[in-house]
Length: 326
Picture 1: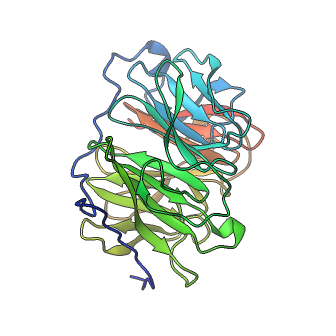
Picture 2: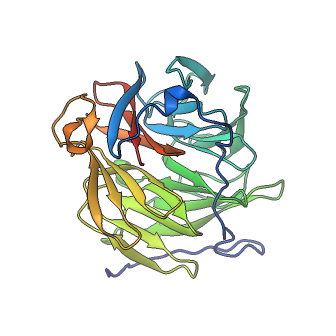
């Protein structure tokens, strides 16, 4: 276990460090359509949509996928038949990255770079500012009420059943110490507080984020490590030896899936921390196949829908791939 030099737990009003004691219930309750269940071999990779660069992915109850591009203002919708259409526009200064559904069935999106806010999007595509004071990324982060809080380059986002949102911030790109994990509590009296703060010492640099059984897991984009924050606030190393982890998602059994952006693989980490390759040979490509016979180019966004893991295959591929987990 490595030593961490600074862990900032800021408790505002009467909120505890963690109030998320259960997982967000799956939104996928409708029967799957045939187009989503054509492969049944474990590790089978299939291309399901083209022409979309998906830095982040989310899925609704009708098995539609929603994709943030990672570098532009448009959120795209991908139907089960593979049709890609623009779904919502964050505006001329929009820069989407992380995307997640909340328990209210709304999409929450990090809008970084020039805006540095969290946007809310209804299933009808209506965009509203949910949290954060708009402005450039050179302002120090500030905790407080939703409309007054300041974010610094928010990156990835996840949610849990009580409505809390967990957001990572990356300040190292701008040579600042503001590389944190922030928590957004829901409701009209909602607040933003800092759960974990990295200073200039050799602590973790939060990047992608996921949650399982009330425990926050986050990757260090540079070191290949994944850390976890227990319910009592203790931060520890969960697993080492991965590449640049862009996307992370848990299945109901507690297995963690990670997209390795530079090694062009999708990795699986068991609850005991055993790491294996689910799919990808490591070579750059776009070939479908089973396990190591498939190829990717900079896999990024991940989401699970039923028995399938969906992957945003970026680079120059601009594909949505699915991997059978059964």
